[in-house]
Length: 536
Image 1 (cartoon, helix red, strand yellow):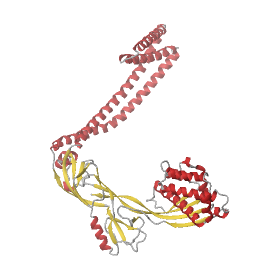
Image 2 (cartoon, helix red, strand yellow):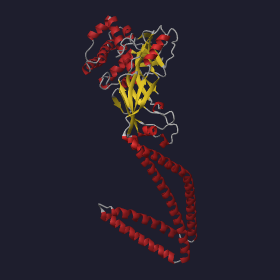
Image 3 (spheres, one colour):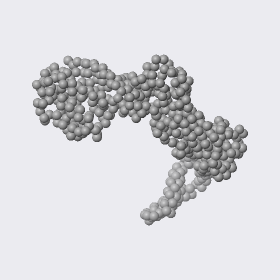
Image 4 (cartoon, helix red, strand yellow):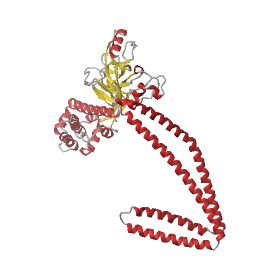
């Protein structure tokens, strides 16, 4: 009968980070002796080793101070044209909006015409049936099809480059069919002129309704396309002005990060506060107005410390304060210079504008996790031996964490616990941790057995060299001799072959590994958390 053993192992945090090699902030500050007084707009997290050491994040919001518009370009001469374009656009939009009413009316007319066409067709069919003119109606349908066929052939012949003689013969054949059908139709109609006259009247009504319906739909679609083209032309002209530089605004950005750290130190003297290390900062631009002035996309580019960027400026770490210039296009400058042209009664000044920016960055934090591992060493050994080298096991070139997890899913099970919903490890991170746990457990148990039982050491020296497990162990070293995982696997396979493959070992030794084991592991993983500061 198999046994179940339970081991509890606590794995310490081992991580080398470019900013701190001995401690990192933890996302779970549950070791504070009392609540920290925080009147600032910065968040904070606690050190993993020292609960009195607090890392302060950059502020969530910060200020920007504009210092005036300067370096106005000659492009501002287009400001009047832009204001006229704006008025023209409003007129075009008003016309398009008015078309909604007309659209409803036109759709109603189309439905009426469709109903009239349906009634006319019905009346003509009833008349033809009552007078025995079904053949005549069939001839008319056939003649209409031939006419459509000839129209297509004529167009093909006009642009014909090859096999033109085939198209010409097809035209001649269709023309002959049309002549024959017309002659037959004339013969049917000559026998009863009065009935034929009434039939033609019904037929003409049908054709008139078809023509009216086609005209209504064609004209309406053309009007819509014309207005759409007009609107697109306007947008192209407007976009051209949006790409032209209008002027520049000098701005100073200040986060107040250092002031927040000093404030926290004064309010909580028992703690040691310091700025948290940051990396991968990205500055993104934007422009808003307190008076609802539509200035979206008004910043063409900006520069900070002599480094220019269009849209995004990448820096190595979070900048506490910086000065720069925002390059505005004509859509941003013209309303400031000539507000009356754009219908602005209370135009904002440069100082009233909000030259918004966001600074995104990353900071390191430790994430706690706990896992429960269930396995049976004998079943794992049998699985590895049965698959052999052909499975790609332990071959780093073709083996992934996902492949490995599937390979061991029935013999090595991992249950994850205590993960914060908002800060979960990714699937790839969990797979890597599971792989490392397997590696540790296999090597540790194999080494312990070799050290603890002389019979296993004897079996290792005497076991045959041509068994599957031994051959696989040797081949692993040949495939990836510098891979620690492969080296460890080779040792494990040799030990397990000695235990399970030899018949001379005591049954009690085999039972040491032929049991169901459960281990509990806890650890802290380093993750880079994204955060941002919004400037306004």
